[in-house]
Amino acid sequence: MSELNKKEIGARLKEFALKKYGRLQPMADEFGMGYGAFYTSYISGKSLPGAKFISKLVKLGCDIDWLLHGDEAGLNMVSDHKLPNLQEDCMLLKKENAELREKLEAIKKIIV
Image (cartoon, rainbow, N blue to C red; front, side, top):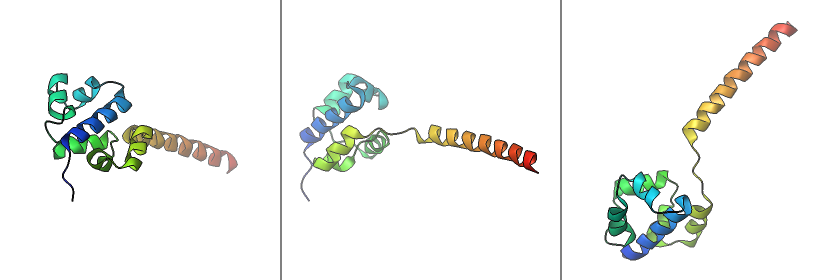
């Protein structure tokens, strides 16, 4: 297994942040960090992201294999990936389902 390159990971993290947000500050905000601390720790390659940081990146739509190893396929996934708000989508579908059930029951009463 090859050693992780902190500077390359920092560059890919920067690339992900810019593709997702257009700037680095919103990414720093996601992690509750000031811009300077975020940049110095992670973007500059001083530190590797820990487990909690990586878990949050996954939730934000980052391909971790690409982030850590630079896999080209992951880059395409990151650039095209928009993480949907699944909880909101689920609530909307439940609401639509309930409305359709009510309409179906109304139609059944008319037919019978």
